[in-house]
Image (cartoon, rainbow, N blue to C red; front, side, top):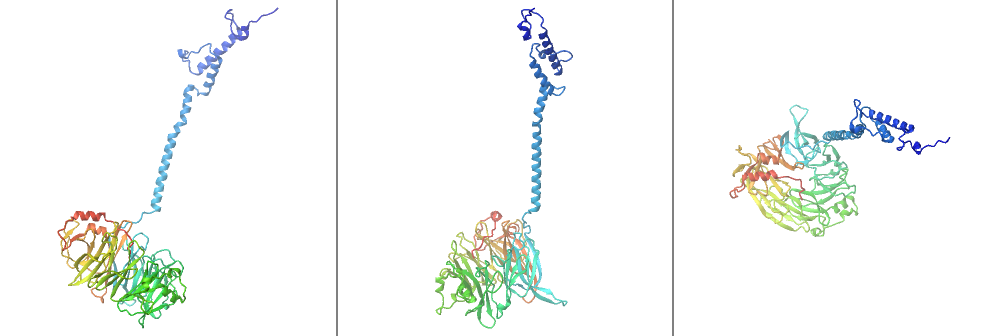
Length: 622
């Protein structure tokens, strides 16, 4: 018997034509329906036995659709829709970024704060000079100050300190007996405290600390020249001796003047020194070259015969425009000797360093007829000798001061450039910029009799007076001072007694006056008809100096006074500091000069100008 199967039997579908029941197709359909019902129940599509209309599945849908939904439902957490679980996974990772950014920001802030605190403790701020004025009593001293004050930064705080040499009365072993002792004291420019103090074997002629490049030490040094046989290089930081010249080199003489520094002539890389000494029994002088590194003599003494009488001049080192080096010196006169000649005789040989091979023909013409090694520059009556650099050149002129005149000699040929006649000059000219031509001018002081003195400012280019004023002064003459400002001008400081012109205080209200006071006056070239009275002193003023606080663009004035009424009676020495800007703004008074017209400058205008003034440590071309 043959059985014929319809193609619909293999396809698993009912024949639409026959409408008969196909068992295979029905079985597949039942399984698909069971899977769909199971998927709907797992996905939460049926609630309370009912299904929402939009979620009713098509009974004729393919099995693949059910399989896909079943796979998705298996990865989702139980009780949550598949779409919701997928969105939670996508939002979980981005939600950590804000916390990470906040943590990085806070960590950066903490690290920055730690660095600021570390720098604040490890790198201290530069010290500020908060002491506008202080006073320090040095005790009883005999003979006053032995050499000019020297200002040098000893402790490295950026503020110049004060070095002073005086004869102190020390208590001896016997009760009630005092012995003199030459003492060098370094006082802090900040508050006047003692930084170090040493005793010297003899009185001193000079203490030089600025511009020295001597010794093997890298720190600042000071060169001390005694009045007899003492020459020593000290450490400015501690006061300890670096080297001392052996007195055997001065066995038959004494030091006549402060030592002068030379270029390096022995080839060790350190500048050297020349000293001028006098024979004790003969009117001869001799030079000694000293190594600036070790303090040993560079050869033997070099002797010269002199015929001058008067004040000791020099020695000063002068370098001409051609590079020739001469030593200027004299006794009431000015003479010159070539450093080459001194070096040749000291070393007893004809060869010398290359720097000493130059000579100046115009200077050599001034040798005497017998071809003496000494060159005559100025004959007699010399009290002071200064070298003045000319603007924009490498040449220096010579400024000679006598009792009756001021002469400027050209450095090229030693011919007079100008001469100013002024009687009874009693102080060394002080260089400064009074005019606007950037040529150094000079302030002079001359006694006029009747207890007065004349203060004159001389133009450095023409030699003519550009400012003068007569003021009362009956004490020992003190040199004036000058200090530079940022606008390349100079203010001049000088002492005088109480004046009687119209006074106007920079601060409102009266200021009590006491007759007989010594006043410190300030002259600024912008206001030539006004003097600014900064301070006063009742004791005898014996020394003064001015320093620069470069960090604060300020300046300060140092005054040394004594209570001694005579040279034989010892008095108490006192050192005081005065900040210039503080003095100008807080206690300064304007003094209108008598020979000026009615003042047109108001107190407010002067005060505003002074408030803007800044000082600077420009090198004076002298």
